[in-house]
Length: 383
Image (cartoon, rainbow, N blue to C red; front, side, top):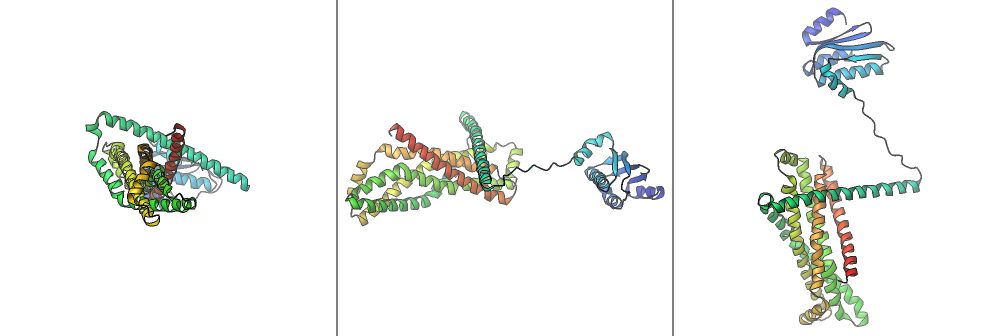
């Protein structure tokens, strides 16, 4: 490109570059408005391999991100073609922009995965264990934050307590779940009584089927089955709803408006489920016992008064309370995991499904783990 061509092009586009021995001089306005002709001229630029050249942009009047990218791309293409770049000079006010675009992206290092089958299996087990421990730590940290928010709400309930939202969650998590919980609890009671009667019949002790049914449903199965159903129903709904809000940037909008997302989205769900799950557990206990009573009546010919007398001998108030005491703890875990995973959703639809599945798996695992821990503790305490 000679001087006359450069002058005509500079007048037309408002940006130019010239080639002199060992120097490439830039000038004018390297902006998005002049990027099209600049791009065409720079792509047609050819400099012999092995040349040493300095890029001097001290005459630049304006430089935006588009122009800076053209400059960085040209520098890299010249270096890739064999030219030696002696230096890149721009006005001081544009140094940070050019350096940011010219920064090399570091390729993440891949872990050194062992090649043998046994070592690879051990590696995967260790990786999964580390991930599980870190996930547990993050959920505990989230529990700490929610605890602080709960204390602040308790100190100023008129300001922070969202009663309408809590009532809505009680309806969604509790009232709407009554049919499915009742049906499954009734069927579990029938199955438990049937299997118990089938085994105890061998010893002529069919009447103790009522003892098995009462203790099993009220103490363990009623609360456990209800918690698993709620984890699959309400816990997944929490994650999916919050995750969809995150994908649609509704949570970001709420934070921009100064709303506390813990008070607005998390605490009503936790409180609503903590209220609902004990009621659902009691309802499941009753339906499970009714299902067992129906089986005993039709298969064992045990009348309802006889069934109730044997049931009163087999259980006590403590039997019922042991099952109900666990329900609020299960509710806290289910709602906490569901809300936490909902806030971890990335901005794509696939992440919503993935984390919803993870939420249900983690909730069910923790519920069963806590139920086992409660059983051990109650046995040690003699309850």
